[in-house]
Length: 122
Image (tube, rainbow, N blue to C red; front, side, top):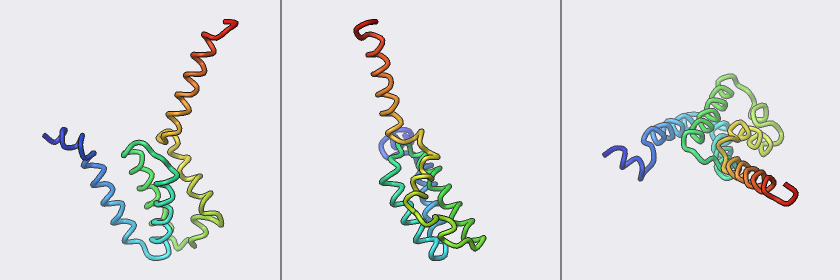
């Protein structure tokens, strides 16, 4: 029964991890809490991560980064730099294998390779 329900609703483990992630972010002091939420929003749109496990790993790493930075007293710009967009885009590159574009790149390369091997002059 659990397998059927999880196929419909998604992994319960990922849901538990997400709730824990949200609790970690909520416990952060400002301005880290607001910055983490803003980065999360950007990463959700820009990242295009295709698996729940990869998404959760990315969000947990983000939470750990902000939690540790808050504990160390690192200034916010010391975390996200002067260009928070570049920070987020560099951050998500660590999870590039889980982005939908990675699958499309592979698909494009496979099709071109196949066509090239069967094309004229072969």
